[in-house]
Structures are given as C-alpha cells and as structure tokens.
Length: 437
Image (cartoon, rainbow, N blue to C red; front, side, top):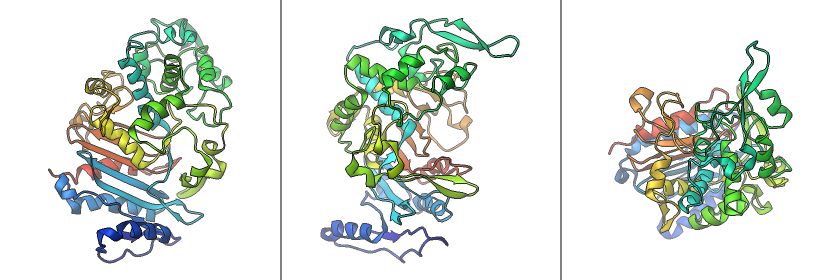
C-alpha cells in the first residue's frame, strides 16, 4: 500500500515520499489507521488498473491534476473513485475536509450531494412504477390534486409582467422525470410570484415545513412553461419525492432508507445527519476573489441541526463516495448489486434513454429520467461514449456511468461557488484518456 502526505499548507504541500512502501498484507489495516491518524492521504487497496484496461502512467495524470487543484487552493480536498466491471480501479483522497482544523480528507467523509439526489428519487419512482402503482403518462394530479387545473405564465404582450393561459394538457409523471413539466427553480415570467411564495432555489434543508406542504404551495402557482414542450430544470424531482410519499404511504426519508439504502448497504446516505456523524461532514468552501473561503461547517449546517423536516428529493441527500459508488454500480449492473435487485434491466435502460429529443438542446446530449445522456460524442466534442449518462451537484461533485465501457466515475468535493474552476469537467477527460483496453 502506498501513502503520501498531502498537507495543504499556506505555501503548498509537503514533498511526496519517494517511491512506495511495500507492506505485508497482515499489517495493512494497521498501517491505514496509522496513516489516517498521521494526516496522510490513503490510497485504498484496489485492483490492478492495467488488468482493468487502464494505463497506470496515464491514470497518474488524473491524480496529478486533482492534487494540483488542491495545491493551488482551488479546492480544499476531495475523493476520486473509478470502478470498472464492478472492481475498484482507483479510490484516492486529496487535501483536507476541514482546512481550519487541519483535518485531511477522510475516505468516509460525508458530502452534501444536492442534485445528485435526483437519481435516488428517480429510482424510488421507478420502483413504484414497476409495482404497477401508476403509469408514466398518468397525470400527476391523480396523486397530487393541486395540479389538476394548472395554468401557464407567459409574458404580457406589452412586455410588462405576465398573463396566464390554460395548460394545454396536464403534467404527466413522465414530464417530471424528464424536467419538461414547466417547473423551474423560480425563474420565468411568474418569478415574482415564486419569490413571494418562498419558492426560489433548490435548498430546503432549513425549511420548517414538509415537502408535502411545499409541493401543495407550488401547485397553486403558474407553470413557467407548457407541460412537455421544453426542458426546464427545477422542482420536478421534489414533486416526484412527494409522489413517492403519496403512493407508498411512507415519508420519503423512510422509503429511501428502507427500500434503497438498506438493501444496497448504503450506511451513510440520508437527508439529515445523526449527531454522531457530524464530525464526518466535509466543510463547504467557495471560490471568491481568487481564494478559498469557508462557507459552511457541521456546526452551522441545517443538515446537522435541523429542523429535519423537509425531505427534498431534488437536492436534499448526503452521501459518501463509497455509498454513492455502490448506488451507481447498481445502475450500471442494470438494477442489481450483490444479489439485491431494485429495478429490472429494461427499466434502467429506459431511464438512461434520451427521453427529450432535442428539447434538452445542450451540445447534442439528451436527457433521460434524471440524467444527462451523451447521444453524440462527436458533436459534443469531448472524450466520452455514446449512451454514457450522469449528472452533478451544486456543491461540485460529478458522476458518470458508462455502460459501453462498464465504467463508474465519481468525484466528491464541496465547492460552492466554484468560480472558474473546471476540474469537474476535466475529471471525465482524464479518466477516459487513461482507458486503453
């Protein structure tokens, strides 16, 4: 096993140890513990990258670039996970999860994953769909009556304000899954009404109200687009989370824990943290005026201190690299992991098919049920595979699932705002360039 000091000091990091340390296998668990106590970054035992089709020298480029971002204080720290054929190619920690306390990034650090929650909620919805609880073209008003008489805001002819017109058709569950329901995070012709209703932005962790109460209020507002006509990113997955509650008869946090996390062995994925895990929550830093600024700690986080009432299916979950990596591996496996099946292969196939045609309209990539889908790598113009899918988080984590290459790529960090840091885009390129077989 190889360990390397990665202290983030004011003038850079300590020099790396020359070479590598060969350790008898019986002593490796002890060495890992000692390394963590000493503040060293641990390289977790992994399969031989070459045996899994990766050039080790090229893979080092990924390691080097992430470390450079730590050294240049563009990020505080992070965790990089690459899996192929269900085996770990790389699981590395970098930098610190708490600069002020001098705490190195730990392999079990817990991250706010924001919009990466959408994939989990989508899986919950599709599990209920497979049980015959609804059809994807059902009107959502069959289950959440407030959406029965939706109207749509359109700009007024004189350019002052907006007027409303009837929705051409009801919002369907499928529209929520594809972000074509006419729901934004408040932007659009009716933005003023959304602000007055306290419905702008995705952050609900500090709300002293339930997601049901929020969705009922949302349903009274005009839509910002006609259902099915355009891709608009917003509260659709929060409505889906409420749908899960209504159809299953369980609060969303219980459904996710009992039906997804527990069966898959996801021990650290939840909407709020128990007090005993607070010390594992990575700090949030932001890039301002060319430097890192502390934004949130466990001591100031609503994810720790409550009110613990609003379960946001669109942006509310916390998780670890290993937990979320297992979740992504389940999707790559066609809905199954370690003998536990949540979804059928055909359902997962539908989830990452392009469901929006050209409505998504960004670089000829499509959008499925909760994921961006690469429909044309050549047109997109960056390394990738046709059919690869993924998404990211406002806090800067990013993931990719590539069925063609049997690959899971996940980078976890906490950076908001990110400024002009583009590491999350480079991660995929640096992973693909190392894949040679």
